[in-house]
Length: 129
Image (cartoon, rainbow, N blue to C red; front, side, top):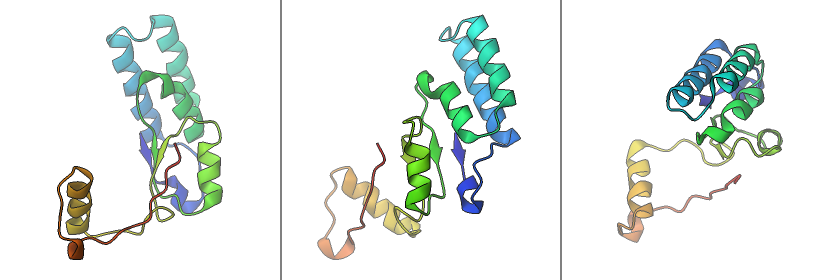
């Protein structure tokens, strides 16, 4: 699940996020990872959820990552990482936007492909996990 609601300061979940979690729950039930009772309870909670945190807790034990986008302040980072449900985030707090060519260079470098030093610029990184 991904959300960019931090950009306007809101943590409210919308219909699109509730539908994403409902689909996740449906998939988990069809694969036998949730009993029918558990599925029905979580599905009702998903459609009643008003925040991204509520939705994240409903799917946290299903092996899915919740990525929050648009993190711009330490306060936002602390808020989303407080209960440990959200383990991945991205936003200007971590890195300003970079061109696609630079992303390719970073990915190549992280996979052991050595590029000339004059082609790489170190970017600071932060993890919330």
